[in-house]
Every structure is written in C-alpha cells, then in structure tokens.
Image (cartoon, rainbow, N blue to C red; front, top):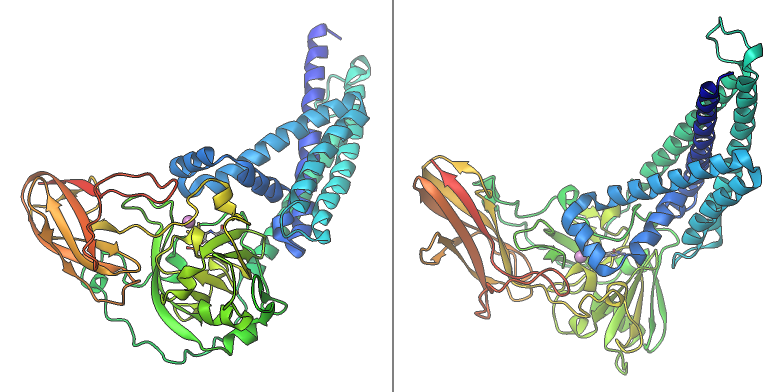
Length: 523
Ligand SMILES: Nc1nc2c(c(=O)[nH]1)N[C@H]1C(S)=C(S)[C@@H](COP(=O)(O)O)O[C@H]1N2
Ligand SMILES: [Mo]
C-alpha cells in the first residue's frame, strides 16, 4: 500500500469518526427533543442551551443581535448552538476512535451542559432532567455502534493488499458503517420530527369557554384601513400581533392545574383558579401594546380588544390596604419576571389580568391562559405572559429579569407616530394620493397628528375613529404629489398638549424617541 493511499484511508477514517460523533449527538438530541415534547418542550437539550445563552448574553450584545437580525435572532441562535455542538460532537467522535473513553467524556460533557441548562431554568422540575438523560443514553449507544463499525471499516481498508481491487463494492464493514450511519440519521429525523409534531399539537389552544363581560363594549367603528388599505388595520388580528419574549418554544400551560397566586406583602395569600378568575367582574378594554425595543416607525406595536379582570380587583382579594410594597413582581410559568409599579394598578387606568384577545382565548404566543396588560407601560414592565404569580414587594428587595439587565426600572410608553403609506424609498405616480399611518399616546390619548412634507409647515392630518385614550389613532392626509424626491415626516401630540419630540433616543434603556421620516420619489 502506498503512503498516499494510507493518508487517504486515514482521512476517510477520520471523517467517519467525526461523522460518528455528529450523528451520535444529533440522534441523542432528537431523542431528547421527543422526550421534552412529551414533558416540557423548553427542557429539550438544544433549546435549553439556547435559552441559557439568551439569559447569559450581555445586554449590549442582545440589543445588537435584535437590531441586526430582527426576528431572525432566534433561528440564528438555535442554528449557532447546533453547529457549535455538532462540531464539538464531531471532535468527540474523532477522540473516540483513538481512545473511546475520551470521546465519551467529551460527548457526556456536552450532554451535561444541556442537562444543567434545563435543570437550572427557574421553573424547572425534576422531570426536566429526562431529555438530557435520554440524549446521553441514545448518544452513547450510537457513538459506540458507529465507532466500532468505523474502526472495523478502517481495519479492512488497511488490509488493502488482500482486498480485491477489481470490485468497487465497499468492504462489508465499510458498508456496515454506512448503513449504521444512515440508520442513525433516519432515527434522528423521525424522533426529532415526531417531537416537533407533538410540540405543535400541544401549542394548539384547547377550546375554552370565555365569560361574557359585565358590560360589553360597542363594536369598534370601521377603521381608515377600510378606505385606504395601506393603513394598518384598526384592530390587529391575533395572528398578526407582534410577539416578543425570551422563549425559544411557546410555553404550553394547561388551564386545568393553572393557578394565579397573589402573595408577598398582602393581607392574606390568595390562589385563584382560572374559573375563579372568570367568575369575577369581567371587563373588555381596547388597548394598544408596544415593545420598548420598537424603533421609531417600527412594527412592534399592536392593538386589540382584551377581555379580563381589573388588576386592582385581583389584588383586593388578597388585601393591600396596609402594604408597604411599591411594585408588583409578576412571574410567568417559566420563571420569567416583570416589575410593574403598584401605583399603575391603582391610579384608575385599565390595568388588566387578561384571558381573551379579540374575542378569542389568548393565543399561546400571547400568554395563554392568562397575562397582564398595563396601558401606558411597555410590555417588559407590564405585559407578563403565561402569568402565574403576583407578588407585592419593593424595588429595593427584588429585581425583575430586564431590570437586572439594565433596562429602565419603570418605562412609560413614549408618544409616537408611524407612517404606513407611502412606504420608504418607493416610487409614486404624480397626482392625488394619501399619506397615512397610526399614532399612539397611552395613557393620555392622541390629540393631533401632523405631517410635514420637505421643508414645509406642519399640516394637521385627519384622525380615524376614537377607541379611547389607550388605543392608537389611525390618521391620513390627502397629498397632491408633485414630481421629485420628497421627505415626509410625522409627529403626534397628546391630550396634555405634549408634542412628540424630535430628539432621538435608542430603544435601550427606556424606549426610542424621535420622529419618523420617509423619502419617496414621485414621477
Ligand atoms: N413571560 C413573559 N412575558 C413577557 C415577555 C417575556 O419574555 N416573557 N416579554 C414582554 C415583552 S418585552 C413584551 S413587548 C410583551 C409582548 O407581548 P406580545 O408578544 O403578546 O406582543 O410581552 C411581555 N411579556
Ligand atoms: Mo418588549
């Protein structure tokens, strides 16, 4: 055998060993994913590591990732975790060929990291270790099997002079390795696919009966979008509502067994079932929600008719007359926390414990079965999804998830307006057209929206229907567009006479400000 062929054989064997490691990790992770799908999807090894990465990422890196990757940040994160893990698993495979124990040690280290990530999640239970254990057992079995087949294949190849050069058929043990590898890959696809199907099935909301509000609101007026379809719909359909959270899988919380605990500095700790909650004084409110990460002119804003119970009523059940608390620390099913000033539950605004959204049960993405909605505060300080606990405490005593990561402790939504049409950098035909969009000013309400074209005067736009101070207003301004390049800007004024500031601020740490302007070409 020439040295050349030895190198080639060695390289092939190395590749096979690398592949064995990758397949061991992949099949193991797929089996773990399936077990997690049946118990707690968030404990799936890859997702648990991804979540740990999210939680450990420093705030500047996180803001950078959200800004650069947008809503692709989560797929990119999961992809990165997978690639890094599989590369390391490949190295484990190569090690295993030399010294099986060394390869096993590296593979188990990877699995242990995933197991630790799952078990250390704030709301983890003992079952959350199962997916990692499954991954360990399956991964080990696949690694042992493929390493043995690979080693035999290499031995056969090295016996080269005895092999028949006339036949191209792979040696039996090489075929054994390829068959084993193919089988492992197939098993990984089937198990991982089954896991995904189960997760999706669990995400479908079971049909729960929603209570009727004590006083139903009148139907909303027809929005400007009926006339100008480029303007954002007056009511955001549930399926189009922006989604922001730290979760890589949507938490699946069942109504049976769900309770809301009100504790901390209260008269007496109270625990409510879903039924208890729906038997209280149920109200409907039209409220616009916004994310602190929304850029001026951005899409992280939506409006819906929410069905729920006043937060103040829920707190009253536990008795808060003599509380020293200044914040409500709310906790989600997965342990995520949000701080809301106690004051906003009691100052008369419509802070709600919510179970219905636009006539439907809350979609799972938006917090099923129960969430908080606080008009006038960004979601991260008042919009706890998958709510399980309201703890009355002080800002000095406890810090919520984003507060620990240096976002503003308390963050009222900044007055803002957005141009929906014409879209930035488009070409329009000269002549009559319409400029339009939405503006919001929770909890004061929009008084006026003005548009400025090029260096002209601010011109008052016409407002769409009014659904209350906490709800956005659609607006439009007819425009006789003349050929050329034009810059269109918009600003809103609230009912207290405050004008949207031109001063730019980034979303971090307390929400963006500035006015949006778009450039269009008319010809
Ligand atoms: N449990 C939980 N609730 C959460 C979050 C989260 O990460 N976890 N994100 C908050 C943020 S930052 C926002 S802007 C709103 C978004 O609500 P939506 O996804 O229903 O639009 O939810 C809030 N509630
Ligand atoms: Mo947010």
